[in-house]
Length: 287
Image 1 (cartoon, rainbow, N blue to C red):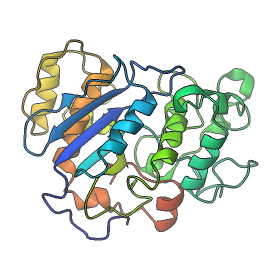
Image 2: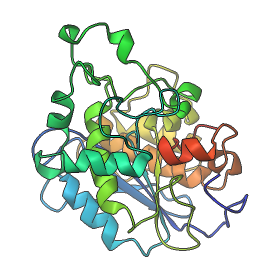
Image 3: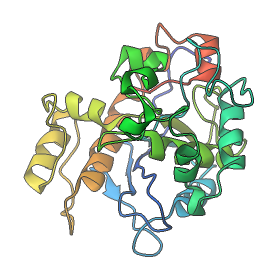
């Protein structure tokens, strides 16, 4: 589903980037990190942000400038909302027949600076998004995409707590809307024969692949990062000025993306139907 051929040519992609994303309010975000590596075994390196910290629009510009490169980019946010089980992304709102329509809807109603979506969520708290006890029973908001049911349950409708993905994902949907037609986004688009492509990733998958046990997936020192990189076939990294979750997640996940790009089972998950591909998307790494 979504790729065409069953295998990926060994030289189809020559660069691999992972982007740890943020849905925070404001313009500059310490929570965004971009790591990139070339084919081979050299460790990924962090890309310096244009102004000390990335804005979401900086990331948009960085990607568009590289759309002709043989670059595979993984973003750590949910590319869509659940659809298949209920027949709608946001029941009661104007219908969005596929993920692209959802991206357009979120962007059109998103008046936050720098492609943010916090106000979109806040205007719909209690109807679609859970932000606290005043919104009712949390369990009634816990709807999941097919890939979330197959992997880690984490829903865009849960917008409270450290593990919530709502704000980053809705801001990410605005970004995808602005990238639509410029860079193919898998599995909504077929994988192109050349140029850049974008996939959804989940950094904990890379951590598990590197041998880190469940519940301990954050790396905060150089020695631990090199051990994890070695476990997935990467050389050691160049020392960082600061070790935080965002930087180490991006570095490790870029290396994991490079190591797993040729796996047909990740490009063709058995449960990925045409309907799911169009409406919900899929996380690359969930077979």
